[in-house]
Length: 159
Image (tube, rainbow, N blue to C red; front, side, top):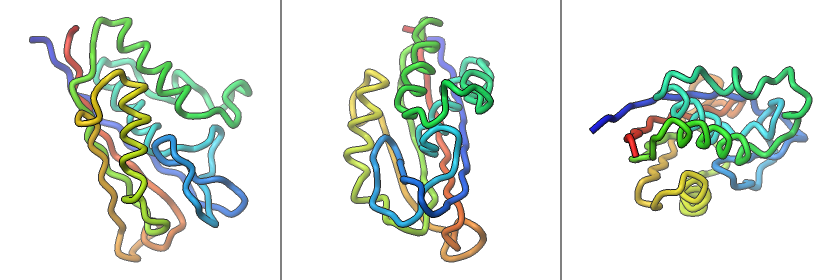
């Protein structure tokens, strides 16, 4: 069986007057992620994991923050486009394992909805989309709620 493993990471600064999207879900928060798109850190990390698995560069290469057509774009669209590149190479998703690092608001109550959204986009079962959340125990920019980070790994299999 031809399998590939990919790893992705994304970081965004947290600022006032921005919405906070994580895994396609808008969370109630006084701070949101700063970015050219909707700055969905989890979906961006997953995009990079998928693209990296097949040596297709990264999210910035395919969806440049210099391109005005991506200004404010819903990151679900970016994930759909990244996954299309994966399918075009004849691969399907085995699974995703991801971790979000954020002090506040709490991510765990929203994980089932995130899994549903991501599984639908990646044409897989919810059980193939693992999402975990942790804090940095009030240490560094993540613990001080000045930034958000996500890590993701994926397994792709030749279809």
